[in-house]
Amino acid sequence: MADLLRDIAYVRSGDKGNVCTCGVIAKAPEFYELVLRTVTPERVKRLYGDFVKGAVHVYRLDNIHAINVVMEQALGGGAPTTLRLDQTAKSLGHALLRLPVAAERG
Amino acid sequence: MKDVIRLGAGAGFWGDALDPAVELMKHGDLDYMSFDFLAELTMALLQRQKLKDPQAGYVPDVVSYMQALMPLARERGTKLVSNGGGANPRAAGERIVDAARQLGLPGLKVGIVEGDDLLERLDELLAQGIPFANLETGETTLAAMRNRVVSANAYIDCSGIVAALAQDADVVVTGRVSDNGPYVGPIMHEFGWRHDDHHADRIAAAITVGHLAECAAGVTGGMSSRWAEMPRTGEVGFPLIEFSRDGTAVITKLPGTGGRVDQWTVKEHLLYEVGDPRNYLMPDGVPDFTSIQLDEIGPDRVQLAGIRGRTRPDTLKLIIGYSDGWIGEGMMFFPWPDALGRAQKAKDTLMERFRRLGLEAEAMHFDFVGINMLHGPAAPMPDYEPNEVGLRVAVKTATRDEAEKVRRACSNLWIMGPGGTSFGTPVKPRPVISCWPTLVPRAMVEQHVTILEA
Image 1: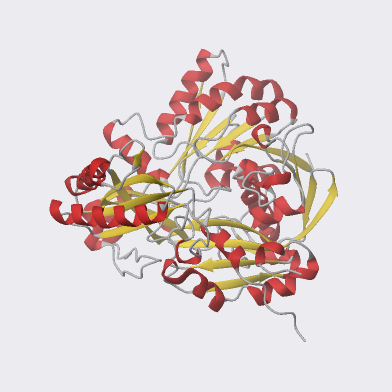
Image 2 (image 1 turned 60 degrees about the horizontal axis):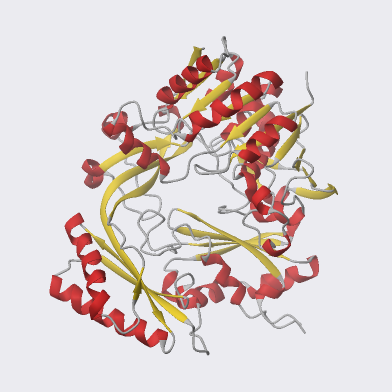
């Protein structure tokens, strides 16, 4: 039984300006629906608190059973300006793996 | 004419390893080796170097890499394409020609691609009414920032690379061409494609494989979520692309090298630093990543097919770098028992020191290393007693003198801090060059190609 997103998905995280982008890839096709229900903009916003100040978008890639999470104003100004150590957000997206997996439907 | 061309990745960033590139050059039977040396903030750093020395401003690695690879490439008929010219492709090209002469490679041709650098033209373009609104902050005009600008480079398409290859360049060196341009250029040149509707899907495929290969080991086992099962990542093989005229491609690597190529390494890198995956906006075109059909067709072989996309946009991304004050920072560490309590006390002590020193901060940030430095509010407080905890502070200031106060205050804690306070080397203040992302009409940016011969 999957408890956390870490049990059902891989991630790769990076930056574009002040935006953090994070690919979330289902470890198996049967987990894709769960990933979609687990990673919603609302849950991502709540997870990161004031680390992510802007909007969160979740894009689907049904062809590879993956989603792309785009978090705006998420880097404290962007790589050259931010006061954080993780300037290019390589680590930041990994926190998504903490999200509790949404309950199975039905 | 060839129906399949073979492209190898030679570098994924300034600072990458040379040995996997040499290995791939020797054994990959390559038509091209492509190199991406630039990141978002690299151009501003290089532009500042050029201001101090008109012969500097390129990525120094580009010369040493070409030095190591040109003799091998000439024997094999492989062409070398990079964006390592940075803020000074002409100087880079001249140094590469010097190196070719010293290596005894007469007749070797180096193509220099310029035109991305709009710094000298910024006022002219502003006068023409281009506002350069900030795409991120929504600030509508650059005018207030104008006197702090240090660099302005457009992300140009691969047209200059294609033109240089058409003039028989053996080595091509550009400025701020897009990261995937050193891959897309050779493909468009070999297959004679134009930036039109008819070729849009195939160019989208070329951009997609360029995107996958441009970080080199990023698609062959580096940065992997499956790090624990990646073999010999210190001896990783760089990606080798077999790109077909029909717009399909295979990503692989040399047999016997470290790392892996499988559906997971490819999926992970496909989504690396991407916005809307249906609209991956690049100067050469706009791939739709949701159209990709991805199949493992053999050991360390992944095929990409079915890629669709749109023609290139009428505007180019332009990154303007501007001076933006200083950052002062410091780090100190605290032992068990009650390591986190010591770190919290040290934070209070630091704040008292900042007040005494009259620090004028534009912004201030504290981390507890080992607790929340990487994930901030997303990290729960530990329900155990940590063996050690660090305190990191970073402060944005207007001037170097203010940033220096941060270093001073951190040093004060050597004795004023709680028992057990332990330090590394104090961190020097660093100047900040921020990025101002904006757009410029494509029509305003003209590429120029110069061919030099050794």
